[in-house]
Amino acid sequence: MSHAFGPSQPTPNRDANEPAEALRDARAGITPCEGELPVGAPPCDQAARAAAAPAATSSGGASPQLPFIQDPYLTPPLPPERRQLSTLALSSVVASLFGPLGAIAAIVFGWTARREIERAPGERRGYALASVGLSLGVLLTLCWSSAIGFGVWMWRTHNGGETASSMGEGEPSPEPASTASPAAPLPDVPPPAAQPGGSVPQHTTHRRVGGLSIVDIGVDVSALSEELAKQRAEAYAHGEKVLVMTTSDPCEPCRGVDRSLSDPLMQTALRSVRLVRVDIDVFKEDLDQIKMPRRLYPGFFLLSPDLSPQDGINGGEWDDDIARNMAPVLGAFVRGQYTTRRQPWHPLPGSGMRL
Image 1 (cartoon, rainbow, N blue to C red):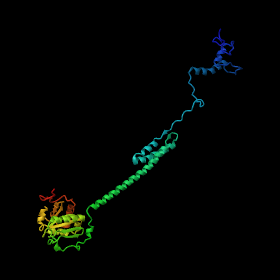
Image 2 (image 1 turned 180 degrees about the vertical axis):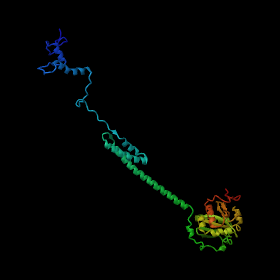
Image 3 (image 1 turned 45 degrees about the horizontal axis):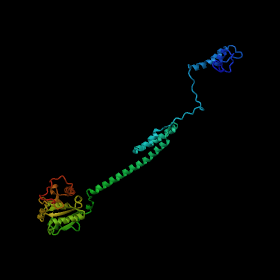
Image 4 (image 1 turned 90 degrees about the vertical axis):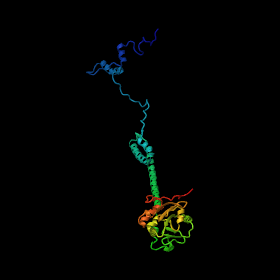
């Protein structure tokens, strides 16, 4: 016994007596025509088949499909496109870390990035970052400018101080010496007869000519080495340097040195010097004892710690005995800068400091 809706039964709600052709037309979606057709119209069955042809063709896959239409009520909307970070904005922050030039570049990059973001706000982001880079660039530029300006000021100040110091340590100015008139001797100048030019003084004398101290060792000195040690101690207390001059009578070159001591050139060369003059005839044995040469005179000697000559020159280092010739030689010799000589210095045998 078969079911009423089994495969052998016709479709429900259909008349079993309906013709097969009508059933096929119903399945194809063709409805019969009702009423009269207009003049010239195609038969009803042909029009129905023509209307059903596109549907059949689309089901066969031969014709192109229609574009897909998004239904906003059935699917969620697509996410908006993310804006890109401005490269110039990031560069403005990074450039501010690279010294003075980087700070200036940060200002340029930050300003350009802000303009770029303002023109296309939907495509670029990073306006706040560009503002930070611009602010850092301005701040660091001010800091670098202040630091560089302070450094230049310190360098110029230090350089100026070194120049003034070198001028102070150089050759002293002859102005103090020029205040003393060569024609007007100082009140404490002994008479000419008491100078080695005429005869050796009985007692040791000390006088000043401008900025130069002149000491003449007297005949009553028992030991020349002790007197030289005394003069060196007094010179050290007054900030002076001892220069020993050997002289004799008669000695015209020695008198030429005496006449030139008041000249401004000699005053400049021998400033802060104590010139100790020793007669080679009166103190012959004492000079030999301390190994001070006396064959060539006038001689000029710098003392070592044991009072023996450390260095020496004589009047043969210049031509005429005038201040213009003697001052450069004596000034360089006193300061230890006289290297090019006509006669090299050779200490006597046995001289020098003994340990």
